[in-house]
Each structure stands twice: as C-alpha cells, then as structure tokens.
Image 1 (cartoon, rainbow, N blue to C red):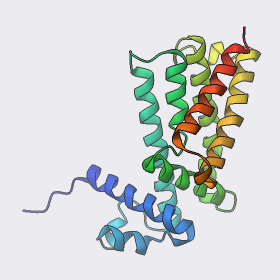
Image 2 (cartoon, rainbow, N blue to C red):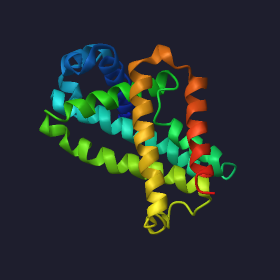
Image 3 (cartoon, helix red, strand yellow):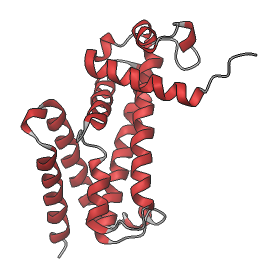
Amino acid sequence: MPKIVDHGRRREELVRTVWEIISRDGIEGATVRKVAEAAGVSVGGLRHYFDNQAGLLSFAAQAVARSVAKRISDHLLDPDLQGMQRAQLILEELLPLDDNRRVEVDVWLACLVRSHVDDSLAELRHAAWPGERHICRLAVASCHGLPLPDRLEQEFTEARLEGQAMRLHVFIDGLTLQTATYPHNFTPQAVRQIVHEELRYLIEATH
C-alpha cells in the first residue's frame, strides 16, 4: 500500500523547522537544503510546500500570521474575557513573551526587513500594516466595550477611536522591536505591566 502522508502534520513540522532556522541563523542561513536536512526529508520532498528561498520565507511568514490570528480569534470568542483583560491578551500575542512567540517575532521581523529588497515578500509588507492596525482596533474596541468585530469599521469612523488605535499601533510596534532586539532588558512580567499601563492610560484619557 502507498504510504499515507498527513500533510497537515507535515506542514506544522516544517513550520517549526523553518522558524527555528530563521530565528537561529537569520534569513541568509535559511536555505531549502538546510531545512530539508533539519527536517529529515529530501529537497524534492519540500516542493509541495516551497521550492526556493523566496517560497520558504513566504511559507514561514504566512504561518506566523495564521498562528497569531488563531490565538487572537480564540480570545475574541472566549465568553469569559472582556474589556481591558481581553485587550491585554490580544496585544500580548504580538510580543515575544515566551519561546514560541519569540521565534514568531524573530521570523516576522526578519521577513519584513527582507521585504524591502525582495519583491516576492512585497505582499507581506503591504498586508502587515493594515493587519496590525486591525488588531489594535480590536484592542481599543475591547477596552470600550464596543461590538466585536461586526461593527468595528463603522465605529472607527470616529476620529477619537482611530486616534487611539493609531497610538496603540505605534506603541506595540515599538515595544515589539525593543523586546525582540534587547530581550535581556525586559522580563515577561515587565512587558505585561507596560502593556497594562498603556491600556489603562488609553481608557483614562477618554474620561
């Protein structure tokens, strides 16, 4: 009988391998051959997923986006979460607060930097900004008890709310970059407190 391949499981295994190589060796060190060796498969066996470095990087970045989006969706659907608590957890998914998210952030930032000189990643760069802004709108909406997410765009026609989302966007981008670049300067507890204080300021500024 022919061997049955679980492509979903194989994809997840490859995602972890690609992420770890990019996080450890950087983008230049992430080659199809190195991934094949680390995953214990032939180079030809990877063609179902990617067949060159550009495809490899796109594969890695898309996997990060799916992973983050799934966790944020879980927070939005959790009936026990609301208000500032939900906003906090949403924003934490963008930060390198544990080994898994640290690798994700390393991969995401590396691919964004590369996208400025690699046209194959241009779509990633163009999608990243509105995607992050949307996440910040979700956090602002959670803080104010606004409906999620069906009326989000309608609510954010109000300049005050969009201004808060813009401020939060700049804040979270800066915090992500600093914590990824200087990890020894930030404990997870300190990062969570920084986010908490920013959200508290956001709420108090509206009263």
